[in-house]
Image (cartoon, rainbow, N blue to C red):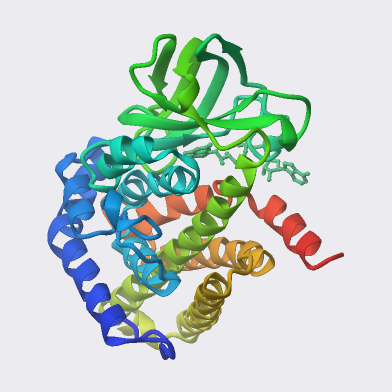
Length: 390
Ligand SMILES: Cc1cc2nc3c(=O)[nH]c(=O)nc-3n(C[C@H](O)[C@H](O)[C@H](O)COP(=O)(O)OP(=O)(O)OC[C@H]3O[C@@H](n4cnc5c(N)ncnc54)[C@H](O)[C@@H]3O)c2cc1C
């Protein structure tokens, strides 16, 4: 059964129609294969192209490069929640991680680069990855160690990146590397092709969750990137990355909402048909309280996220910054809600939930990465308070 989400005060016929399209895509193309793809640790590339053909990678990207020519946080919200609800985070991560590198390309790349690179990534024909995190740390990107040194018409990049989603299959990378002094001010972004001389990658195979998503460690050994590969100016490019992180945090939060609701719905369905002590599980007060707690947290998150989506749209229309404090706060609320609901749903399913092959078990394994990636809970709390001016 599907529980009814709270009201959608900002809904429009266009958003409802987009939501239907995404849901149909998930129902026909993803849901029937979720378990098999998770076990296989992979899924067919054709899915990227199908999602691309529906425009799912096109938010905020100009039509000239295959994008939608507009952005809408409420549509991103619908897409993120539906993908989270599908209950296979590896597919979600693998498809949509390109979104954290197309934004900087749209904002900073030259016309030629956009035509060559953006068009094919947004269409889903090839993959792209954002490479910021290094073995020495991901939370404090102002200390990243990868270096880029000018050599004639080229840049020579040296260093290592790790935990990179889509890293094994990507054809293009947006790479953060130090070209100047300490801190964010000395960092530049580079657009690097997978066939650049001096670039190699190794798969990280054994992960707690996101099995269907490929993850890689990237090595740059005097990797030669053309001068034109530098995106924007040293230091300034980080602003584009920050904007990007805000979109990422919003989408991850929407994904958490979908995951949490899926846990609630599957727990209710199970509790309605399972009998213990002579009556359905759902009639036991302790279980009913779990359902109530899950449902109220989910509704609160749902309403908060819709309000933030409206604020993101409003800020964009006014040329104002994104609501960074709210995005940091909601990211923590979202991962905590997903974690709580996955835990309670597992408990309601009992031994059945512990077996591989059900969405609740997958989600239980996948909530942790939501508390770490895209800005961990600790870092988001710090950022929220800083953004509140404290
Ligand atoms: C499956 C997966 C996919 C990922 N995909 C990508 C990707 O595509 N591209 C990319 O660039 N990165 C990616 N990442 C990396 C991710 O962004 C980092 O893991 C994250 O930023 C945290 O960095 P870290 O793991 O190095 O932890 P660290 O920065 O070493 O931190 C370790 C722990 O300490 C906490 N901590 C750190 N500093 C503080 C502090 N000041 N106060 C309190 N607590 C603190 C952190 O919250 C964390 O819990 C991915 C990670 C995973 C697991």
